[in-house]
Amino acid sequence: MKALLMMGCPELPVQTAAALYIANKLNIEGFEVVAAGNKAAISLLLNSDPEKHYIKKVMDLDRCIGALAEKKLETDLCFVFIHSDSGISYLATVKSLSKAKTVAVIFGKEIEPLIEASGDSVIIAAKAVHNPTPLRAQIDGVKSWAALTK
Image (cartoon, rainbow, N blue to C red; front, side, top):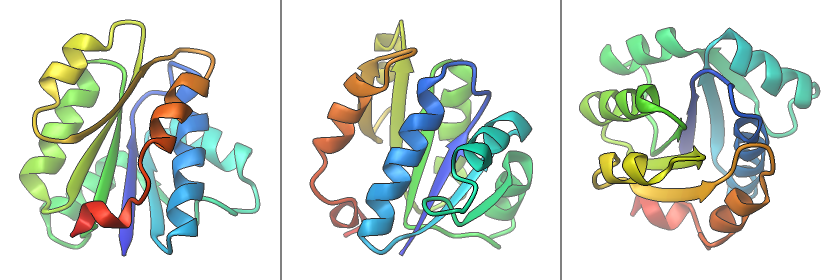
């Protein structure tokens, strides 16, 4: 099984911590994890996981969207990290281009409008900006990511 983590601008510090935490959970379940993001998001991931224990493969976010559109990339699960309207746009893009089950990972100060805009995606949400613990608690509430693909 393959999981894609899509990250936009790492404006809020919890994004990198949450991505690595989710990647760890996915690796334990046997997923191949691919992270896509802008240059800053990928740089933070690679600097936080230099030996690639959690994230084995990274790619540019625009190339990722292109690969999804051209059907060169397919995943079973796609996690979209959302703290603004642009994250909702990425979520809608993935839904239109892929058959993957989408998981909206929502964080920030004002999460309610983002939750409402996430539609039928699985939602992992917490008011979190600097401290990842509230978001981690929500992530831990999911017992099996593989079960979402069935």
